[in-house]
Amino acid sequence: METLIAYCTKHGATEKAAKSLAEKIEGNTTLINLKESSAKSIDLTKFDTIAVGGSIYAGSIQKEVQEFCRENEELLITKNLGIFICCGNEELAEDQLSTSFKGKIYDLATAKGYFGYEFDFEKLNFLSRFVVKKVSKVKESKFRINEENIHAFAKALQG
Image 1 (cartoon, rainbow, N blue to C red):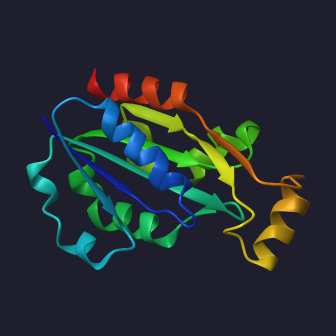
Image 2: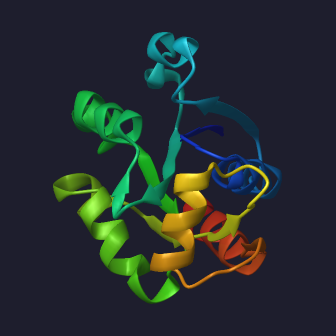
C-alpha cells in the first residue's frame, strides 16, 4: 500500500501530527508539506491512500490545503481518502473539519480526524499570541497533540 500524507503547517503542530500518523500507517508512506514547491509535482496517481490535513487559524484552513483539494478533487475522491485538522478548540473541531473540506471530499472521506493542537508562545509573533490569548483563552504554551485520535484515524484509514 502506498500512502501520501499531504499537510500544511504554520508553526509545526500539524507537521508533528502528520509524522506521528506516518509512523502508525503500514506500508510505504510519503509526507509532503503543501507549502513546499515540490508539492506541485507529486504524482498522486501512484498512491492508494491519501490523507490531507492542515491547521485552523482564524476559523480557516491554509489556502494551500484548499487549493490542493480543489485542484485534485476528482482524483482524491477515487482514493482511500482521509482528512484531518489541528485546531485549538475541540468543541468546534467537527464544524471546522466540515467547513475546511467541503462537498465530495468531506462526504467520501473514509477517515476524518481532529489531531489536537499546540500553542507554542516561543514560535508565535506578538499578534498571534494576542489572538490566541483572546480567542482560545490560553495564556501560556500548551501542547495537546492527541495520539489516541491519530491512532484511531490511522486504523480507520487502513480499514
